[in-house]
Length: 113
Length: 112
Image (cartoon, rainbow over all chains, first blue to last red; front, side, top):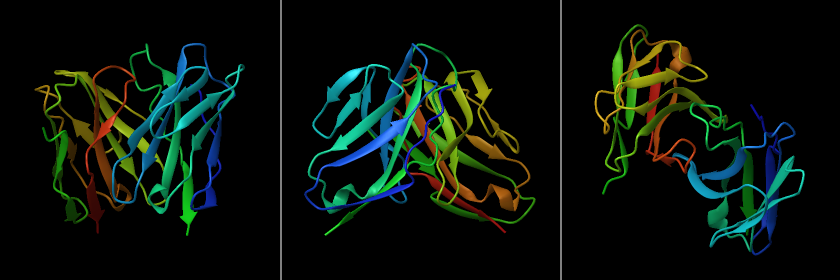
């Protein structure tokens, strides 16, 4: 099981780019990396998923180096509404069971006006 | 299309009481999950189901039971409520094994 390590908290000013790094030293060959966002009093919401190199969608980018032992979620030009907790999950898409369902404590991002 | 619904939104129980947290999805997903989230902490998996009639334990199953008689419903049962079960409970579904999880709004449970 690939556990993950993230910073507990980060602060950023509005309009800046924010990069949140997740370490997953024991990632397995078949594991994918998935990021979720959670606002207070709500369930987590999917942001982005990737396997290697770079993935980009309308919300964020995900950078994964060649060794895949870490990944970086990049949020461009954050706004106050991006204040939330961000979780990194690592798991095998092709494997049945709960191996990919450990959320950890996440990174609490606070965007400052 | 309501997605994932959970009832009740809030509940206060006395120690030793029992209750069932309801979770219903209308997305025809096979996989369903129950998590708990303690204040300031991440989510911990309680139970999950890969289809009707099939359930399995997650990371913290003690004190809970589940059943999955239909694709749509995945109720979570607390038989003897304890203060340690005070938490927010989230239900989630996925179409496949590790696809994007869709979460319900949560149930905030307090055991006094």
